[in-house]
Image (cartoon, rainbow, N blue to C red; front, side, top):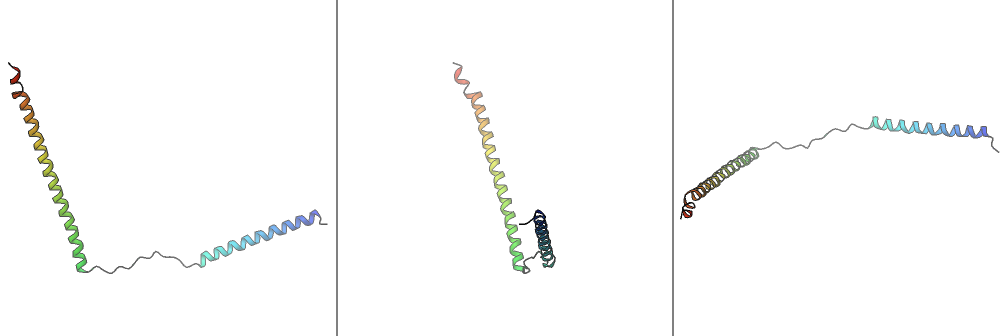
Length: 107
């Protein structure tokens, strides 16, 4: 039979072996991190733009600007016309109420 002293020694030996294996594993992990080549951020190489591409991009930008300006002018003129029609309608309605509707009740 094994004595309690032998059991304690066996447990201590196993604990020591486990600690040693953990150290070795951690050391291998650290060595792998150190020896790993550094990773750099890469950028895709783009060919320089030609004259035609630059002109095309400029024309697209000018076209967008012109569409924006024309759209704004159309919206402003349309809203102005609607406002004028509404003002004329309100003035006409007020004139009707004041001058024409009041004449029928004087009999």
